[in-house]
Image (cartoon, rainbow over all chains, first blue to last red; front, side, top):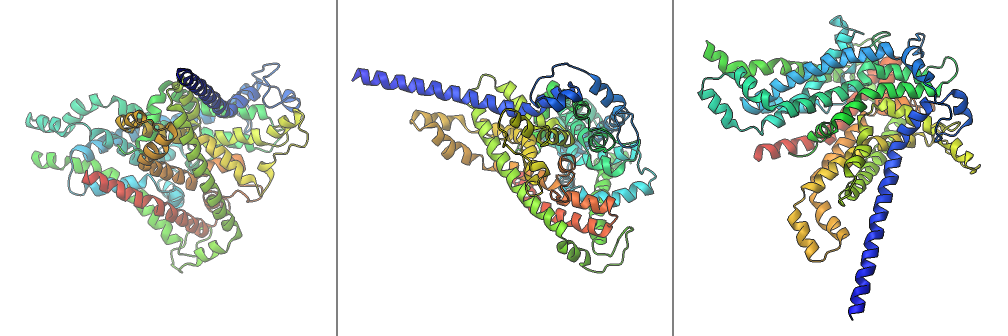
Length: 296
Length: 291
């Protein structure tokens, strides 16, 4: 009788251990699956073309060379021009930094109004803004192209900044609104009694509490704008294209030999800023991703 | 005067954004809708002729392919991402020691541009030097994996890359959901000796219904908007075998110079998004106002 119990608990233990091991192995396999493309990109970018043609996709490079990285950065062809990704990388920086800051600032003020200074119709305005986040941008591409032309911003980085700000404020407003509704309204009432006005309450009470949501919003907007392709390809011209458009042009340019190592180095360069942000501030990135979709 | 100002500042502060949304979202939708009812070609015309563009659109074999692809891609992308995401979330929920690191690995594709994802998978899936050549090199001479250049299969490569990119995000959503389930109920069930898989299938997963809905909305939205991934991975090809409504619209607008077809296809995309998102947003906003 006691033996029986003993042996069942032992098989139970073994079963549990096996299950545990199976779980870890399965998780490792999935991790390999997610890492494989990054691994292949990095190793391919470090190989010579000869080695790529003769060797295996998953093999480590025999002779590590950074030549492809140099080409990708400063001399790969994006069409007729062969200046590499560098000028386009800076275009993306020039585009993303102001667009992120402006849309975040506007979102903060909007969110503050909608959360704490409710007036008749504020809810309707918020609903309309929220819905604006979900439209497929194809539906505004044609009129926006004409509007940018009318405003003299066609094909310019300023025009792209404008577009990203306009279609970003829905999300930034949502982020700040959802954050500010959790701050007690009594705080606002007390401050009003003390004679503080709209801007002083924002400046002295809300902004100091806002650091986490500012970080979340900046990361979200930066990732969106840096990775954007649709607006970039629709509203830019030679010379003002963002890095994603240039990358696509390098990969799909038909002149000369196909240089896979240069393609991969270019892809990593284009991905690097958002990857670094993700690694450094992943917590905030995830919060941004889930903010709009989990009921809070 | 200053009191009046104080009272109206909130409205004045919100007004520019509201005006921008009204013009650049709703006004522009109106413009596109209007133009979709005209005979616009290279330049917009404003005389309404009825549903001419929509008749042409639905008679076009290329649009047919784009819609079929949207259903194939959308269905597989959503279902596989959900299953994979849920599986990963449940596995990570078993008090895994390296959870943080694994979560980071599963989710990093979401930080990448779809152009980068498309470029990477295009290289991996290319038959000449990629996965196919590698497996052949291991001695499996008859192994073929030419989906990328096979018109019947190319759309599935978009699914592969899309799932790789988005499933980690679904995992993050589900993991947050699993963690928010009342731990007392789970403990009570464990005390009663209910097996773990039953606890998941009968208690935890049903209580996560709202998260399934959220994940579905986000994924469906991603699927309909999918543009970059197709451009980078297949360029819509071979031929137009992997065209999606988004790439169809872009081709009509910017390479074919056919504004009428571009506008009408954009309106159909809009209608699909409307049908999915509006009921969801409506119920969300109502729940918030009631609560």
